[in-house]
Length: 252
Ligand code: UDP
Image (tube, rainbow, N blue to C red):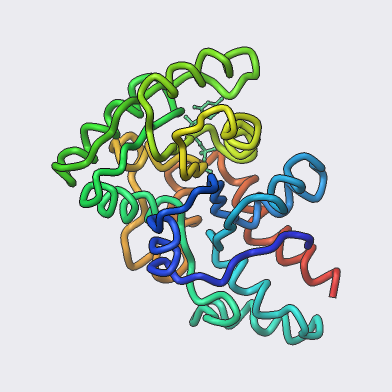
């Protein structure tokens, strides 16, 4: 569907993120909804094609990559099989933004990497900082700011971030606003080596919203849990579990 996804395991990705690299990296954790959104959004499609690394953040992507050369009927059968077993080729595993952030935080705490947390509702990024400091006492979170993804605020936010000289930036404005924000601004923040849009992850880490129990996450049913907690998400979930497979299969 026009979007490259990198076949990294999470541990390979962490090695790439923490390898000394002189180029700035924009990492996108791609989910089926983002792929659908990009079909009607040229700017987002371009960003997804120029980002440094795209990870598979959604079981639908593992399935889509695993059915690239299959007929419609095989793709449908593989969709049913998903309920029992996730494919591991050609994409080796899911790399969910919400998990990745904790792994990055753990390694950053060991290496002294400086992190800035941008986005979410006022106070949530600050709570997230405290929560991460509790879990990883040596972590260096040099700043937090809620702000908004509006272009009018960009200059001010960029100055706030640059004043703290961070190495890494997590942006929680939801997709595609966060990816567009990063693409427009990363070059104006020279100390940033890695920027990642992380959706609602601060809400989970700060405890504002609870994640699904592990067994549901392992079954690929986190979406079902989220639906029971936030019924207004039904349209987004419908897109991920029905519209995305339908559009993918219709192209085969
Ligand atoms: N958000 C924000 N400003 C906005 C829109 C969203 O700070 O103008 C935050 C919101 O509070 C949440 C995050 O962006 O913390 C993304 O939420 P969403 O549920 O859309 O993300 P998902 O995890 O589904 O990608």
